[in-house]
Image (cartoon, rainbow, N blue to C red; front, top):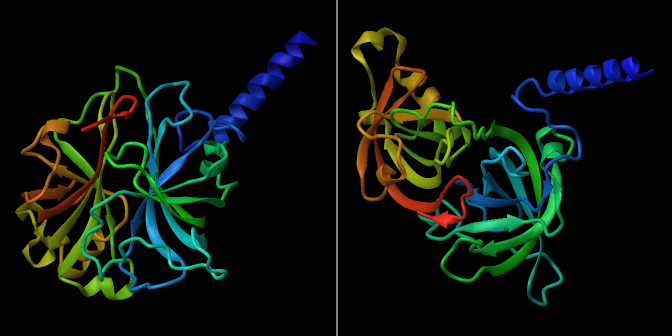
Length: 298
């Protein structure tokens, strides 16, 4: 009987790893139960009322094998207002900056579900919707969090989800790395020469840092290196730049919080798995915290 139990346990463990093959650790249903908040990065949609299309960055991740927050996650989601904190019976527009009317966010805007929920259920795509409070500010802003509204976050795609391994054996990147997410996801955005993007620092090895910035790329000044010039034309170049979650490297800067990208810097970056190189102008720094616990501001 004992031997049978051992085999059953091995089978179940193996099954969990097969199910979660995209992650190097098991994510059994119901695990990583905690309060999980999200930073709102709205798209250019000309919305004045109703749902907000946005990227949502996990606020905040954390290294630690026993931590319920040990993932870097960026979601493609829809934020629908339920009500504002006023006397209106009909839900009002969520009062945050709406691109492209407002060029800059300037502040952090977050949504936090009051009750704890399982991050594993979200990673397994068993949880696709939750209600929460929308704030101007967060736990790490220098000003008090201001509640703005209640809303429902509907997850449309788990765009980026990476386990944060705290092992000292994980090598650091030799150069600065950011992941990019277009601010305009419309079909017309494919033809715009100036691309507004959110760049999110790729958290990779302990202690690292969590940094989110807003940049603009003048695609007319992008080019491919000479070795791969035949692989690159204007259409392919734009497709690569506008692919959510692609990795950019900045070979002139070491991967350190002191070298993070800040306005009004203009710097040349390269898509690490392709020949595309572009000058990138940093417009604003939205959020920055230092690991491994990400409880200290940059």
